[in-house]
Image (tube, rainbow, N blue to C red; front, side):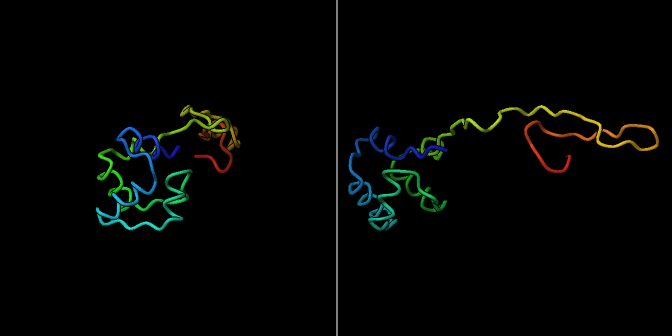
Length: 107
């Protein structure tokens, strides 16, 4: 996921982290300077849902505007299921369903 707070804030004429921090405090969400720095300039490790709700309220946006999905080079975007014989029981192959690119026990 891409954290898009800075872009969403800019679209609403909020250009400084300190300005957003003040607006959030007025709405009841007091954020330390360190946490505000992470929210503003990068990818925060965590965002509480209650905090996200207040951020969305202050910026008049939705969580979907703040959290934008990113395609990962290593992640496959398929839902196809392949069937392969995994064992033979009484002369009949037993088919197990497995999603491509996944390891572990069959589904």
